[in-house]
Image 1: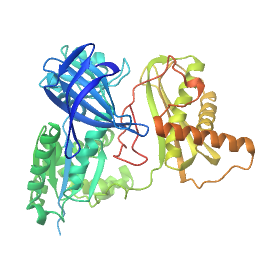
Image 2 (image 1 turned 45 degrees about the horizontal axis):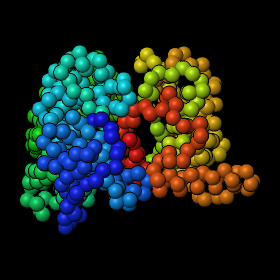
Image 3 (image 1 turned 90 degrees about the vertical axis):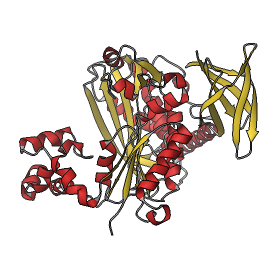
Image 4 (image 1 turned 135 degrees about the vertical axis):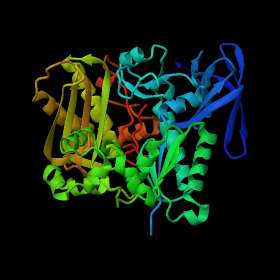
Amino acid sequence: MEPIREPVRVAAVFAPGRQIRPVWFDWQNRKYTIHETTYCWKGRSGEAMLLHFSVSDGSSLFELIYNTIEQSWMLGGVEA
Amino acid sequence: MNRTILHIDMNAFFASVEQAANPALQGKPIAVVGSGGRTIVTTSSYEARAFGVKTGMAVWEAKRCCPSLILVIGDNRKYQHTSTQIMEIFRDYTPEVEVFSIDEAWMDVTGSINLFGSAENIAYQIKARIRHQFNITCSIGIAPNKLLSKLASDMQKPDGLTVISPEDVGRIMERMPVGALCGIGKNTVRQLKIMGINTCGELGRCDEGRLTRRFGIIGRRLMQMGRGKDGSAVIPFGEEDEVKSVGHSSTLEQDIDNPQEIRRFLLQLSEMVGSRARRYNVSGKTVTLYVRYADFFTSFGKQTTLKNYINLSDEIYKTALSILDSVELEQPVRLMGVRLSNLKQQAAQLPLFEDERKKLFATQAMDKVNSKFGSMSVTFGSLLPGKEKGGSHVIAPAWRPSGIRNVDVK
């Protein structure tokens, strides 16, 4: 996966039971609709809990990262 | 009362997680490698294993076995998170879960069978939950002890479930090669072969005195293993023996022979060891330095024991450096490791002299910032990015879901 690490605009559904489901995101003036979240995992950077989502738009795989302290989204990487 | 022990072994764990995370990799030969450019295969998918790709192979060697091999750079945090969640699933069935490594665990379900019907039921539920939640598979062995359950889980891979009941033990052990038992390594197999012992059946029938003369005190244990006997308990996390050392090692991205770069890398490792020791309030008296040379096969390890207990990074560094200065490096360095052992729980004590106090306060401030913003957010100026930075971090077998053995590797 090619690392990107850029802040991105993400639409996500925060469902009951602490479930977060990213729906779409903007990157480089293009909107990507998420077809599938293939994997989720947690990590830490100091005090910040980072939630990682492997998502697919049907043709490429992306890694979206949600920083729970800053409440910000980042595009971690892309696999074309 | 007969015990019932489950051994769960995640199949090609890192590779399976990568295949689950990236559907394009499913059904393809993949190898998980470290982030360094020239590392070895950490694990490979079953599709790659069919071509002869094995754990520990150099990347070029693996590519020669399987030209279509896809290399995936491992993401240790993904594996640690998945492993921690899986261990949590195990704890839904019994509190007696012993984490053996990131992808293996034992469960003593003797007291849980009445609740869940049977050990097989528990195994099937675990397999289904892991598959549903993570889309990966595991092999489970059910047996009357840890030794046999581990043997059973190895008998059917991937996605197997093997039961060794007490009445089957003799029959199964009779023809089982001794090397199949956990704890009997290549060296022991070789020595047993010289004695004319190839199978567990032969080992179990061997005269105890003969084994003791050859292997010392473990001779009796070997004989018991040959008979499929193992009285060791499943030791839940938190009840293990105290941790005996804190260490870090790392393979460099490229071999280095410049003394300044070697020292800088040593400082980086010392800081990693020191910060982990301080986080868990331990200090140690013995510092060990381990170096592997560029040819991969030559290495040395040397240690020194101090009068005082230390855990400040610069003290660990100075001690490791004094070891390094006492040897002449024969070749460029491929891998280095620093370990602090002879540990004790640290009681907080303010140093008497002001300079020492300042150093302690500066270290505490640095640790505080790093715990808030992430490790190495504030570090020594000389550790600013250099040629030798990075390296490939591997999850050690001693990794545990939490506590001092939970090493945060990137």
